[in-house]
Image 1 (cartoon, rainbow, N blue to C red):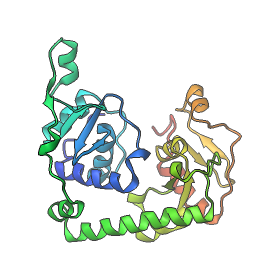
Image 2 (cartoon, helix red, strand yellow):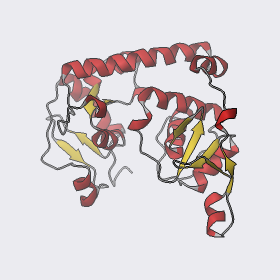
Image 3 (cartoon, rainbow, N blue to C red):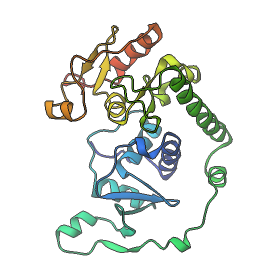
Image 4 (spheres, one colour):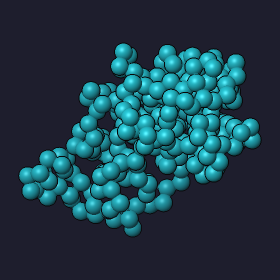
Length: 258
């Protein structure tokens, strides 16, 4: 699957704002490259994945990292750097490196990067409606997580209790939920990063009795590494069951619907 050509710079900027709200630490980390924007670093593929959800309303899977993702962002005017370094890469960096050609064009000059107020950036980029929505997201998401923590301060699956590693995960994804559903505690679980990634990407779900359902796309080695077993079971209520049915139908992946 290639990156859709209708994703614009505006979609990418809105993706960055959304990522800032949920926290960069909750994303799948990059291994070699980072999108550098306003003194922050982001995994290029995750940014594109979020941008595609905003532009097209579905999760983009099986698209290329490396040159495909980097070239796409660079052509939109963004800066991509080597991971944990300040070296800026140019188009076809990986291809050039294989050919023994230098693919970097210098280092970021941080002194030339002004400190930009987030509200000023939003004022220039977002419409009044989007600004209001973003403010509500910030308030709503933090309030949603706080209430889930008050309800049960641990990962729903493995029991991790450290708040630093707990993510407020919507069962029905936030961007596909109504305003009421986004704040409905029955539409959320607190999960550790590993289990949040598996649940969010549709590799695990739960039946009406709370028994885990594991995708047949997940091999045994990955299941062991990410701590998921077929004996796992969680407590669910009627509200959870409503959203879990949606999750099974629209998010969960297996060989038949992938």
